[in-house]
Amino acid sequence: MRIPISAHPVRIPLILLAAAEGLALFSAPYLAVWVRFADTDYPPPTHGAVWPRGLSFAIVMLLSLVATGLYSDRQRARPLGVLLRIVASAAAAFASCALFFYLVPPLFMGRGVLGITVAAGALACLCVRAVAARLLDDSIFKRRVIVYGAGRRAEVFGRLRRRTDQRGFLVVGFIEATGDAPVVPRERLLPAGCGLLRSCRGLDVDEIVIAMDDRRVAFPLAELLQCRLSGIQVVDLQSFLERETGKLRLDVIDPSWMIFGSGFKRNPLRQLSGRALDLLVCAALLALTWPLMLAVALAIKIEDGPGSQVYYRQRRVGFEGCEFEMLKFRTMAEDAEISGNAQWTMKDDPRITLVGRVIRKLRVDELPQIFNVLKGDMNIVGPRPERPEFVRELSEKIPYYRERHFVKPGITGWAQLCYSYGSSEVDALEKLQYDLYYVKNHGLLFDLSILLQTAEVVLWGKGAR
Image (cartoon, rainbow, N blue to C red; front, side):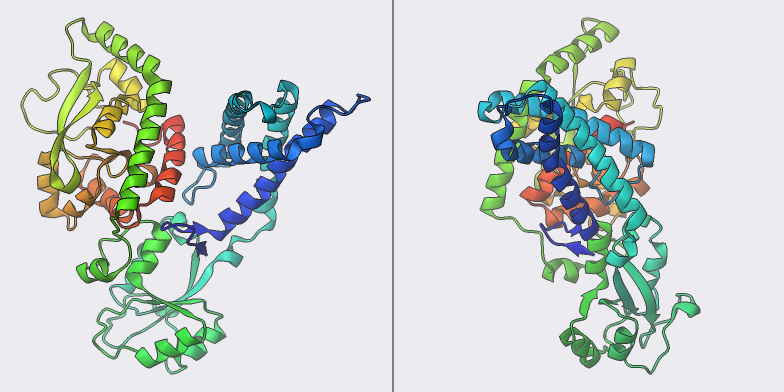
C-alpha cells in the first residue's frame, strides 16, 4: 500500500519505519547528554534545550539514510549491506552536524556528545530495522487485488519477476472477462456466477484492476460502480502498473491513456522551482568539487600528454529534440571513434583510458555537465541525453521514445536509480519506461528524492561502466 505524498507515491511500511527511526534518533541526544555528564554535579550547558538538537540530528540522519538508499522501494541489500549503509549514513551525519552546529552556534553540540549521539543513533537504526524485519509481516500492508481479465493484458502480472514490483499488492485471483482468451493459469481463475461485489467481499479485496483485452465487449459497468460505491477501489491496468512498478509499461499503455490521464504537467511554478534547484545544486557542487575537477584534469594530462584534450564535447539530443553540445571529462582514447560511427559503450571497453575507468566508476566524468545546467541545456534531474544517431535509430524501433524529450535531460535521473547502465536497444527500452514515468510525474519533491538517492549510486558504484 502506498500514500501519494508527491506524484511519486511512498509505501506505508517505509513511512512507519521512518517514523520509528526518527523517534529513536530524536531521543539519541538525550541519551548522549545523560551518558556524557552522568558523573558531574552540575547541569551541562546543553541540558536545558536538547530538543532542537535532537530534531536537527534526526532530520540530518534521516536524510543520510535516504541518500544511502535505505528508504528505497528497490533496496535489496543483505544485512551486511544494510550495516555498511547505516555506518556510512552515520559518518555523513556526523560531518554534516559538526558543520551545521558550527554555523548555527545556538545549536552547538560538543564533540563528545555528538559522537555518542551518532553512535547511539546508528545503533538505534540497526535495532529498529532488526525488530521490524523479525516482527512485522509485510503482507499486512499489501493491497488485496482482483484482476478483472484473464487474457493477454492480464498476463502481464505473470511477467512481474522482481520482488520490488510486487511489494505493494497481492493478487488473490483473476476473473475471466467476456471476449478474453484465457492465458493465466486455470487454478488462479475465480469461479464465475458469484457476482463481482460478493467475490470481493468474500476475499476481503481492496482493489479491482481492469485488465480486459477488449472493453467494448460486455464491460461490467453496473457491477464496477456497485463495488466503487461500496468502498472498493477500481483502477485501470496502466495506472496500477505505473504506481506499483515506478515505470510506464510500454506493453500496456496507449496514447489515449497518456492524453486523458494525470501528469505531464508543465507550468511556470514548476519551471521556476526546478531552475532554482538547478542553480542551488550547481553552486554547491562547484564549491565542493572544483579541487577534484582540477585534479582530474591534471591526471588526464599526465596520462595522455600535455597536448591531449581534457574535455569531451559531444552532440546530444535535449529538450523537445533540440541538439546541444554536452561536456564531459574525456574518458576514452582520443581516436575512440576514428571511423566516425557512433558506438555503444561496452563492458570493459578497451577504448577507455586508465584515468577514464576510475572517474567513470566514481561518476566524476559527469561533473563538467554542471556548466550545461548553468547554461540551461540540461537540468540536474532528468532523462539522460542520448546521441542523435541513437535517438533516430531507437525512435524508429521503440514507441514513445521521442516523448522522453519533453523535459530537459539531466545529470542524474529516475532511470539511473532504477536500472543499471544501458548499452543496447533492450536496455534503452527498459530505461525509457522509467524515463516516461519521470516525464509524467516530475516535480520538486520527486527531484529532491532522486538527488538524495543518487548518493547511493555514486558511493556503491551502481551501474558504472
